[in-house]
Structures are given as C-alpha cells and as structure tokens.
Amino acid sequence: MFQNWGFLLGEIWVLLALAALLGLLAGWIIWGRRNNYAAENALQDKLNACRVELNAYIARETPAVAAPEVGEDYDGDGIVEGKNEGTRPEALSGPRGGVSDDLKQIKGVGAKMEILCNELGFYHFDQIAAWSGDEVAWVDANLEGFKGRVTRDDWVAQAQVLAAGGTTEFAEKVAKGDVNY
Image (tube, rainbow, N blue to C red; front, side, top):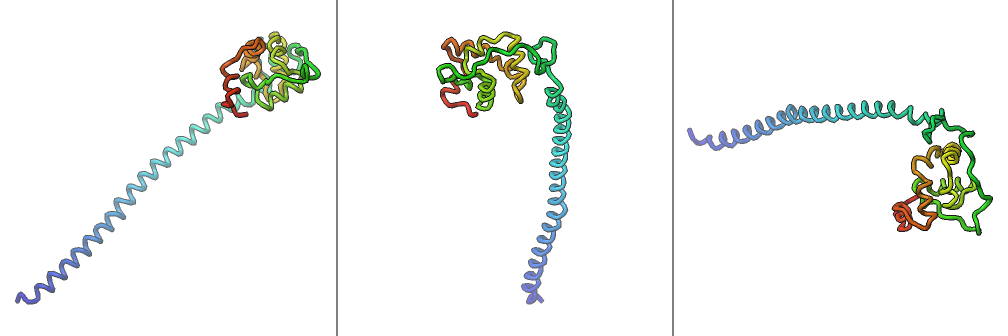
C-alpha cells in the first residue's frame, strides 16, 4: 500500500509548485498592473495640472510681451514712449582718441547693445553719465529691441561711477570674466 506514496508525494509537490507559480502570476497580473495604472493616473494628473499652469502663465504673460509694441512709459513721466520722446543726447561721430570705453561694464549692456550704442554715437561712460531724464527717455525709446533698458538697469548711475574711475559690482564680474555675452 505505501509503495506508490513516493510517486504521489513527488507529484503533489510538482502540482503545489505549479499552483504557487500560477498564483504569483495571477497576483502580479491583478495587483501589479493595478498599481501601474494608479501611478500612471497620478503622473497624468500631474501632467494635466502642469499644462493648466502653463496655459495660465502664457495667458498672463502674453499682454506684457505685446505691450512694448503698443508703447510703454519707461521713465514714468506719464507719456508713452515713442520715437519723438525726449531729447537726443549729444553723440560723437567716433570714439575720442580712437578708443571707446568698454560699455559692457554697465549692467544691461552686452555685445549687441554696445554696438547699438556705438551706432547711436555713444562710446564713453562720461557721455552716458551726463544724460538728463529727457535724454534717457529718448535713448529708452530709440534702442531698437531694447526699449526701456536704460531706465530699468539705471545706466546713468553706473556710468557716473565708472566715469569717475570707480568700479561697480557688475564691472568687477566683467573684469573677472564671470559674465558671458
């Protein structure tokens, strides 16, 4: 009677192992996939929230981008800047002694802006330092692509320090090479 028990026990272990594997597979399919859906849904919700925030930001920022084309009061005098705003500062036909100051030492003046200033006849710190409010308004209105930059970055105050032989924190960064244009 007990002679076939070895075969029976061996067969039962195989069937138990097979049942355990099937149970694990079924559990993974049911519970593992379910957790992935929850994670995917959470990520999708976050993505949708980001899209909503981005659309709100774009809608909020669009008028600010369009405003300079319509006109803006850069100097705060209550008049929207235009080509005829203010008085043109005294310009030079070229740099004195053939050498211009490094206007890039003024915060807000990069390589392109320096070329634009030179084209308008501004080569030296003392020229910018002497600008009146009316002249600043003219430059702010006539810097194509950079309208309002003179007022925003307070070029006149920086130029006064640099023209007097002093230095500014930004000019020191430029001298160290910490500023990329």
